[in-house]
Image 1 (cartoon, rainbow, N blue to C red):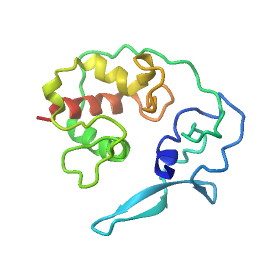
Image 2: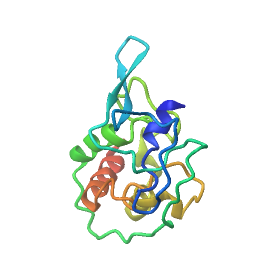
Image 3: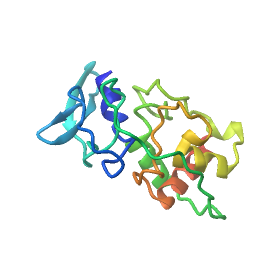
Amino acid sequence: MRLLLVLAAFLASTAWCADPLPSDASVSGGKTMVAKVIVNSGRLEWVPHKRDLTPWLTLSYQDRRATPEPARFAMKTPLNGDAARGKALAWEWCVTCHALPGDDWPGSVGNPMLHYKQFKHPNPLVFQQIYDARVYNPTTIMPPFGRFGLLNEQDIGDLVAYLQSLE
């Protein structure tokens, strides 16, 4: 549960809310902590995230901070995404919740992304899902990466290119 608290610590910015961070959030020394898998050990090591995620809403029941409304985003065409860069982003942001090819300890909160190309989802739908999935599912726990500025338009385009390349 603690891992989910940290990883979902991106759902609302302090620009939109002024309530304090809940006491059960994974923060140490003012830095958001994330779990790092210690390969073949069955252990996790808590390390500071390279970005401070404390402004974002957590999955804690104590976290009552408000969030902005869901937003649609019109993807510019053509996609111009870089699948190699998208893979690196997926391993930074997505692997905690989603199973990805080559992952020994996949996330189990979100749908598996293995063989994603077989679903033939249109690029604008995939882009919107990453930008702000709340447009399709208001109760999702998937962070609205684009809506809240965690990923920019190019980052999301790169992720879409990577997902669409997964045979």
